[in-house]
Length: 353
Image (cartoon, rainbow, N blue to C red):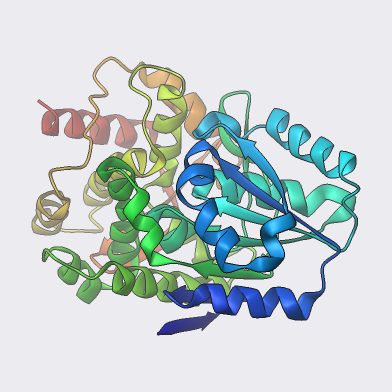
């Protein structure tokens, strides 16, 4: 059984039969050469299934990067471009991104600017990539310690989601992706939020529901000019926190930082009288206890504020946030003050004691 969702000019295939769809896609497309981007984990755990299921990929050039956020850099893009050139990649070459959010972000960006753009497809292997990064057409690199400050809008030619790849994840990396699923429910669908609070949900169902909700926003606002901005809920604070801890012993995964961001930004919404205290309490109690609640006590507020200033939504020295106005609904382009941010961080600190 396989589910197909039509996105912005491409299809997202989900299910155990996706390799048949991938083989069919490759047969029709007649690419001149194939490149597969993966990290050391997906090389070992996911690549064999892909290669044995799609005979055309048995001659593909494999490009391996290090796993983790530090690979989302110009240095690694340069490594991929060099491999393209050394292997005579032309405009009819295809890059296959086999990995999580880092691989799809890096691969999508690198493909989108090589020879002014070559085709790429995503085969996501993490819950984060399946439920969130697989749809939207955003690519991104980190630069001088600022997350996703470089990037392009570039749509893949297709996305193929094989849910069994989730079996390769550690519990921490699975929960990392679940954070974005919770975010999607909080901003767009209260029934989905209520469903998430119940245990034992089918993973494929969660992926399909999350993609469907995000896809609706993306189709209505492909270039992030309006309502699509609500997808940034939890990310203005979350990205700043993720950047602060990058490279430290307490380095956070993206979803872990977003969970913290959602809690802090929910309190900002409460301060602005957008949500009631009982809704704030429901959000706090609804976030599962297994999420990492990193203490922010030692973080200098000024450093955090400087990172928030680099958020792409901000301009004219004002902070613009996307904030929920009830569970299942979100507003965007809301001005938030430094004092409101400080109060919300102080509140979050009480949760981690």
